[in-house]
Image (cartoon, rainbow, N blue to C red):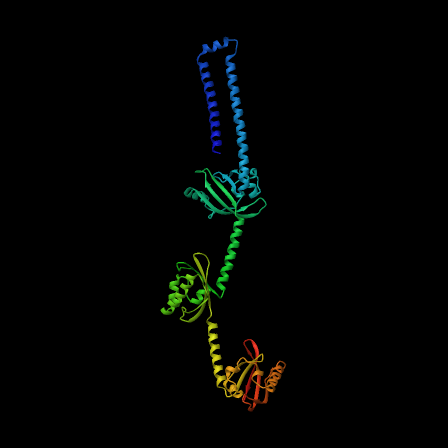
Length: 435
């Protein structure tokens, strides 16, 4: 390509040299003939018309050079047209040149694709034909030119209007042509970009709404311990705003005031990071209102430099579990201290037996638990219990009956059995109370 440019430049210089030589010769000859009249009269006395031959030859040479220049101009125009078509096909932006009164003096072929106008339709017209007034202050006529004079260019937005009346978003890049000479404008349809930005913003708003209204708290931090993002739910759990807890160090000091416990938690988390394993952790914190809360946290790595923490306030569940444990302990003590024998049977398996029942049947608890009832009781009592348990599927109300029990030593003991259904471990069981 560089060689072609050099050859083209050499040919242009050579053509210019030829024209200059011929012009110098003709000018010199003309001056010489006008000055030396004797030489002119000598030429007139010669039968061969030397002067006319010279002038005609020069005219033919000039005509030839003009023809060559014309052909080169035609070729250049053709190349420019092809180049413009190529640029138009790969660049959909419309390029227009305006004068100081905003009249269009030049435009490329993209104007037809963008606005549905031909070049002849817009030449001589003002830019009002293509887009609405884009000035921030419509009363200030030279607003754009003042920006061009100070900055050299201007990038702004406007509403474009096509020939069919369609209005679309337009980006206009304006360059200054010179003082009071107008400007060069590059017009770009940004409909797709606006639609993409709108969809992106909608998705961002939707995701933010999920983060803000989710009961789970979310915190994002970097390797340096700086908190990048903290959701509203997490702020509610901690009781602190993002501005109050910009780093993990400050956060830990506020929500875990006990130094010994804080060092224990930090050691666990440091070990997780060193092993690149992040199991769920349950920690006890003190929020801004000085309330003790239990939080379950799970750390995940987002990228090489960022981590996300998912946190849940599980205080109600922890309190419920504690209450359940306390209730079970109270029930266990009640059962163990009861003066009546108590058994719980599920799927014909003894799940629970209290000391009084063990005393009645003559089996220690360790021998009776998790055994079938026919292995503990005699056949008659086992059959009676099975019939009562089966009948409770139809009539779940309690059943009371009397029976004579033969214990392990062979002693006959009259007992009263009270059966009722309960739910244990998600399954129906039979609660038997004997006395």
